[in-house]
Image 1 (cartoon, helix red, strand yellow):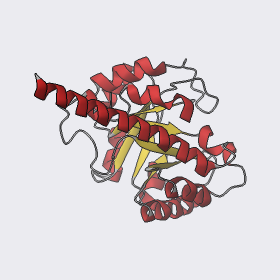
Image 2 (cartoon, one colour):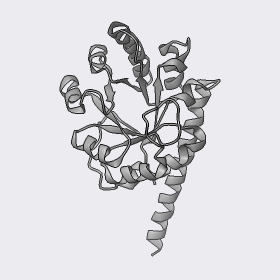
Image 3 (tube, rainbow, N blue to C red):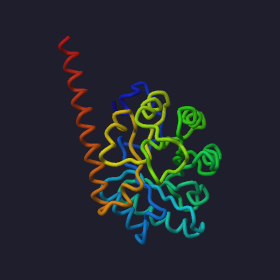
Length: 244
């Protein structure tokens, strides 16, 4: 069931107005897998093919370099109607006027990030269980990244893969968009969407692909199939109601 169908009573203020439409592809760029390719070129490859969100995720660069890169990525994203999120570094997100920040459980608190960035920006948080997701909702975040859904080497947090079953539980019980992350590929995306995720966040499936643009297209084709199936199901249900 689609995210919006999983909770039909979802209030209009339960997500940031910039987020969506769903399902959404969230591409994370940075780290060793980037190789020698520029952040800007990879961002172009992602958003020109239809990714809705891009995250800058670099752990070892100086703040001034991160701000410069983030501004360049932001401009590319905005040219194509996409959003730029900065991982961890609220200071960089603020200085670069990014669309938001994504924080982990050991990073600055979502509440503090909100105070620094203001109500107009997006604040997301990483979670790996229902309790953390519920706490994030209480903290007023705009979305959660839940994982690792599948086995992965890029999200090494010492937590076993949660599978689509936890995605379903969190998506059903927490009034927030849930992005599945960790080991996500076009081949295993459909169960995550069917579990109620608002989308998927991808790292290695994009950065290690022989053709990153084709990787984005492959994910979006899964989204298309999923959305078409949901539309057909809704139309069938509507027809059945009229026949009863």
